[in-house]
Amino acid sequence: MQTNHIRRAAGLTRGRSIVLSLMACAILGACTQAANTSAIDRERQKPVQRYDIGQAVASNGKVIVAGTQSGAALVSKDQGKSWTRTALGAASLIDTAACGDGSFVAIDFYHKVWSADADGANWKSVALSQPKTPLAVTCDKQGGWWVSGIRSVIAASRDKGATWKVTDLGEDAQLTSIQFIDAKAGVALGEFGLTAYTEDGGATWQKGAKIPGDFYPYAALFINRQEGWVSGIAGQMMHTTDGGKSWQKQPNLSQAALYRLFLHEGVPYGVGNGGTVARLEGDAWRAMPYPDAVPVFLGGGAPLRGQSAVLIAGPGGLLRAVGTTATQ
Image (cartoon, rainbow, N blue to C red):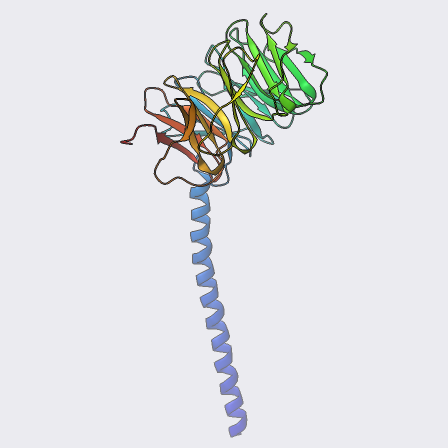
């Protein structure tokens, strides 16, 4: 009798313990679930996400557009202070440019060209058959779209992507940079030092003298028909003052590969590996120190109008204004 009573008491105790444990788990689980859901919901409502990788930035002076690897267009109308987000679906924006009328054009790794109005809104896409893999995009002074990519192909559209004209330079090389300098002159640079120039608004392209050393360009910046810079692997920098007829090495004291080059307040800047922001000072490129620098690759950079600052973009939702004066 006593043994049975003890067994029943022990059973009841274990039962109560199990019930209390289940109730505690349920309560804690509910609290944890509610907290996690709330945190997730708040995160999802942010225009810039932690998984965003900024790959390209363009500014028309009033609006900034940053394209991400995950297919979002991030738009700021207040020089980077706040952002709005447009999800473009299954896309990866690898380059973008501002056109003369203020509109934007961007290329998608998945064979599309995207465009938006001067407010960075009303995004639309058109299919791109050539080049098979697009690598760079720009606008000419008349608003035409130009895309360069693998196998030395340049594609042009003067009707917002309805039709395309393709120029094949006949080289097994990637054209990684394309730029129109003025209404008639343009330059495209590529793998193995390949150069191509137009002087008739893109009607024809001619190959020029190669950049020495089988140079692989990451980015290029021409400020007129004669002078330009191109960045390459392992921090290489090349400079021309005769329109690409000859190229000279230029010291890059930052020692970082620069993936984007742009002009700010008349000074060439570059952003790249290791969180580096560099600029041309005299005859050499120097790293510009800034507080709380993060040692990650910077995929995009752009000038901030009316400010002594530039915008940088990178992984982890990095979109940040960096001051360009010592006091900042």
